[in-house]
Amino acid sequence: MTDLLQLLINGLLAGTLLAVPAIGFTTIYAVLRFPNFAVASLATIGAYGGYVANVRFGLPLPASLLAAFVTAGVAGVASDEIALRRLRLSGPLTLAIASVALTIVLENCVRFGFGNDLRGYDLPVLRDWRVAGLRIGPQQVENAGAALVAMAALFLFLAFTRTGKMMRAVADNPMLASLKGIDAVTVARIAVFTGMGLAGYGGMLIGLDTSVDPLTGFRVMLSVFAAAVVGGLGSIPGAVAGAFVVGVGEELSLLVLDPAYRTAVGFVAILAVLSFRPRGLLGERAF
Image 1 (cartoon, rainbow, N blue to C red):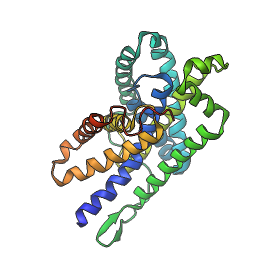
Image 2: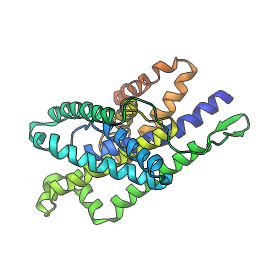
Image 3: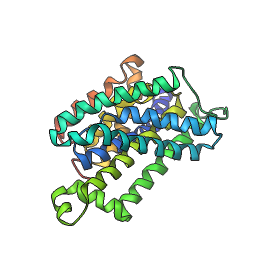
Image 4: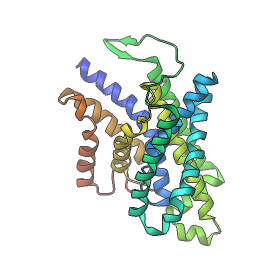
């Protein structure tokens, strides 16, 4: 029972971290209507942006997380303008394939700049908290708190700002939004900046929980994609729900599976959920 509870806690904490890049992925999908797998490399770029801010410039973690968000957001918009925007009329399949190629290019750019060595953030060494035989790391709790702050900020942005309402309008009905005078190109750039920024923010949170290397984003991309699909592509609440399903499922699978097979749990979740709800847990609700 103790092992089960420990894995459940680990899964909830992992799901909280996974939710941030999953929200970024589904935000871009909701507005641009294609799965942008470059989220993987932008999560890595954000993790390194936060690393530079934290280790080389000595900034505290909150400022470093902001640096990770901005770095990934700017890099995401730049790479989208250079590589993907001109392909949007070619259809979602072409864009999805191009985004895979883009993430490989960006991943290797990171490798050339920083090498392949594992890197860690400047963090204090803290003992785990022990409660009734369960262990919880203080840094894990801080990371989960930072993830919840990012999610809350996004929900407030979408609900109460004019720009957020424009993004929701384009996601709900692009043609009607255009008739209302909303500039789809500007909204697309904002969506890419926000989505990739969240991916970078989430990449740094994952790096804080483990370490950073050029494959940081690639290793979690399958889980991020699974979370977005399980929750319902285009639905931000769905991405959060899907992240918890995948995070808890991956941890609980360790009771019966070797850790090497844990990433397969996300695809089992996709098959199980889509067999009964083809649009995911929360459908295609836009934001």
